[in-house]
Length: 214
Image (tube, rainbow, N blue to C red; front, side):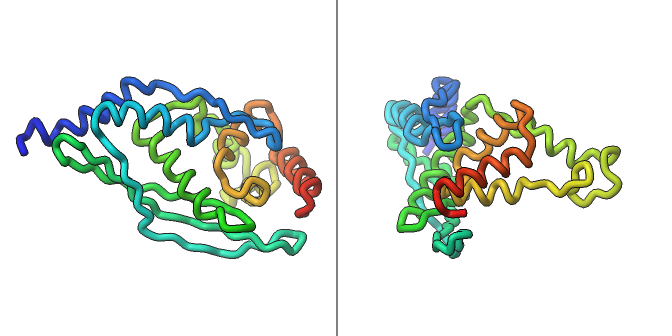
């Protein structure tokens, strides 16, 4: 294989970055009232251009773990964490590029693993091709507030004398949705609307009661 051939796969992947500039948030979660980029939208955009370049993506689950979770109502659910290996293969040169991504899913039945794999692939594609959706973790102002030494007497994670509810909010979201997919979109959107963590916690608690799991 020539040096030029060895660089061909990188050029082809760069072509995807040139073509896929943005993924519109077509998905809408009525339960949590937020928009999100679906796995299907991401995969469709990327797949078409990869196919034109004769490049395929092979997923491989290298490891996974399962843990049981009992809801407040005593219902049993399963949380699955998967480590995924993704391999780009150039059909013309045989060149390969491999990278990894972690995914997590929750379900009361047998879908937790599939949710975890789907989430891992979605974010793997979005990150490797640097596809923007309009969300930015830097927009989470509560992180800066929690880390602001002048606003707290101790660096113990307390904000204005109150413990951050983020871990609790995440847990309730996962209990409702079955995974953390879409959580960052929703959370950052609430922060932008000046919704407090206490209000988010109360909202999710209400939804859990409506669902009959709180």
